[in-house]
Image 1 (cartoon, rainbow, N blue to C red):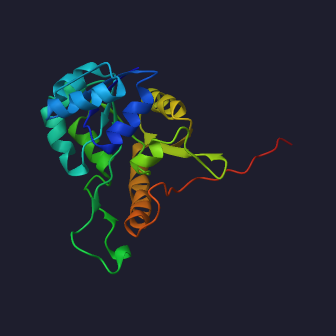
Image 2 (image 1 turned 30 degrees about the horizontal axis):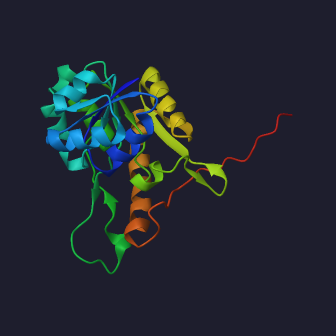
Length: 224
């Protein structure tokens, strides 16, 4: 699979490094020098601008901060450029005011959109793309684990979207990480994934280990 990353931060580094050995990965961003540095580090297929990454990838990973997603889409060429592409939204639109917080639980809440979630908002910006919400519920250090396992169990990675073929490709990428892919349903369920991620973010900013996760425990169902 050809995977174009828009962004070169911690999440982009963690995921792209894991996929570069089995897929063709391209790193793109506003700062092409930083993109080139990451591409060299992970032995990517190439690097360049945001439009370059969009043109390269069959699947595009939006690995910018949530508040930069719209700008990244516009820089990448807008609706026509993303048409037919699988676009993976890994972001969490979270309101985190600056300064010390004595009561952390009051602050880490999802930013609301008229459409219900950031992923659904992205779908309105690039309606001809195939949007999948995934990889948003863990900090980058979790994706660096090979494989991500907790108490002897695989990490269950939840994802959702409206296009079955796009979700199949994302499930393949999840499998590559050594995780168990679980389809939550249509893209509207991104609202639940973004809200659930805020629970993890609250824990992280409260001082928990950066590998803190919410893992789905699925007892074995024995056939009758």
